[in-house]
Length: 251
Ligand code: 13P
Image (cartoon, rainbow, N blue to C red; front, top):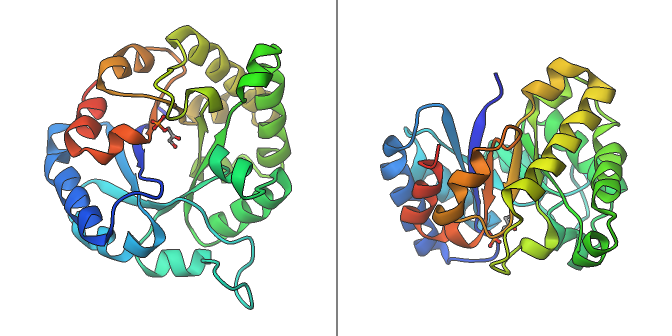
């Protein structure tokens, strides 16, 4: 049975004090969420150590938003997977569209990052999704399929146990424009089919696939009711503990 997850991507928001406060509030309210729904908070690098401490003893797990594509060495400004695990981080988001768009994150680089993350024992939330032009040109299935093939097809069925996929249509991120439940479901079903083709039905059925893009308490229920949507990767609404928890309560 695949796990349901609601993950909050804080992006470049909150200072350390605000981050700790938010993490503590999420941890305190996490007892009000269904037992079978996992909660993850993806905080900025600078906050991870303190956020891990703040959520200790609760079911909330901690994620980074990125990691380096090298293990260690002369890579000024980068943060390695070993550094992440050493501060109590359990996950990393990889391939977020903002990193693909602004920081030249390619599928090739992502393969390296996923390898390092899994090797270090981190879980990976791999983001995929089409932009508005690709959606309007009817290329969304093609784009998402190739992102999945380029990255995940380099891994094994065993590796997939530590990988969560997040479908985030770029046109729905931070725009207030959510994909309809039908639009999201048809891509999620397509992702699951592509995974089944490579790794078999069991792995595909066991893979958690999250939806991200203007997900909020008012639309989470309808999205999460879809057969292939296993939770959400939440941006803006994750910055308010009450909203984040309300989304998790939509199950
Ligand atoms: P919003 O929920 O703010 O649209 O952001 C979604 C997202 O990018 C999560 O990674």
